[in-house]
Length: 256
Image (cartoon, rainbow, N blue to C red; front, side, top):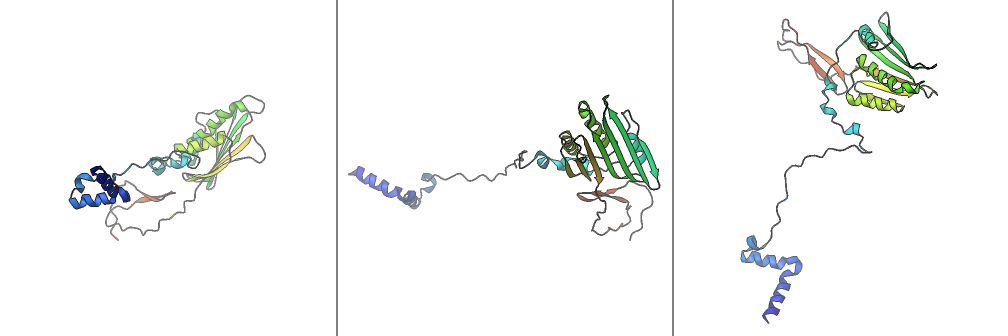
């Protein structure tokens, strides 16, 4: 009889997912001892997992570009003649520089290999005096397969020697596509860069680098001097307008 009563009581208390048992324990004041309480959920912040390169997220889109301070460093200004002369450093050919009025042109042509049709690197830069450039073009004539690697290296070195500042990722991006002979048109840093095959010739390619327009203006009003030196340079950047104060000595500007 006692066993039957015990089984009947257990059945009554266990129905409805144990709700009757919970009510009895709470009525007796034993809920703190007999009811298992689930541990509280963790509210500690979790570190965000960095996305890895996949087909949907290429490595170039998930890289840590914000840490590349080179994007915010203004390249030193150089005269067009000096930039042209740098193209011939370390090579066998000397560039030619011509200026007419306010315009200038720099040309470099270098042959590689000893075959009847050697590989040729042709560089042409044009701009306005004294130091601004409008276009930088590299023509690659891949006529000697044994010189393909050397021609690619010289093309990338020409970009560096001419003073076109590119981040390591952008330089790698260009190198991979030229090596694969893959056409592209991209905005990299402050330049539009286009690489394409010359008409129907599979052995001749053109790489064109054109600076982006510097007509960006800041909409905020000009601050008042308040008796302080106010000399700054507005530098064109895709992030917006960056102000770089110059360290100069002189008389303070009178307050507005």
